[in-house]
Length: 79
Image (cartoon, rainbow, N blue to C red):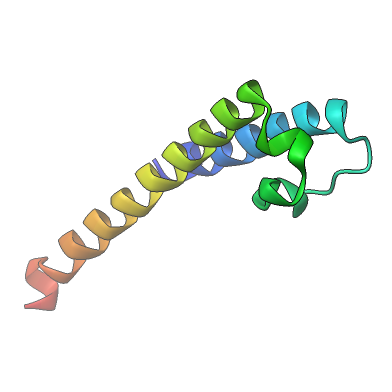
């Protein structure tokens, strides 16, 4: 699961950067994290949709890691 989430995140970031570079050719990976700095991205519905997918994957990863940490802390070895 860890590897799957890592791959999903990296692929979505790559996809978002590719989409962003169609609008702004000089866009960097850091730039896609702050699209509000670029009106072309901020107001582009497809870019914003894809950005939402990235946020969703990040939320799933955070929830999964929290659940995993809780399970590990409650395991018999740690009690």
